[in-house]
Image (cartoon, rainbow, N blue to C red):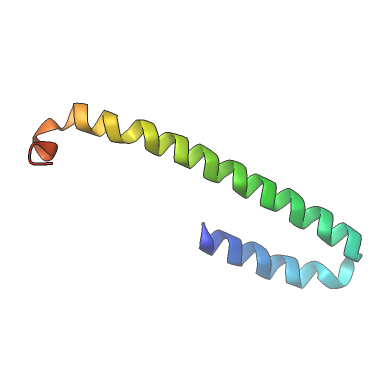
Length: 64
């Protein structure tokens, strides 16, 4: 996620000269909302993944 954020920030910096401050803020807000949404989805998937891994590969979790 951090690498994606850096590349977006670099791209946005290059575009700054063509956009007004208000437009930049709107774009940045939209991107941050999308990244936050992606993070929430990843967290939900991770919550389902752990029990699924335990069911699928029980021998890996016997000692834990």
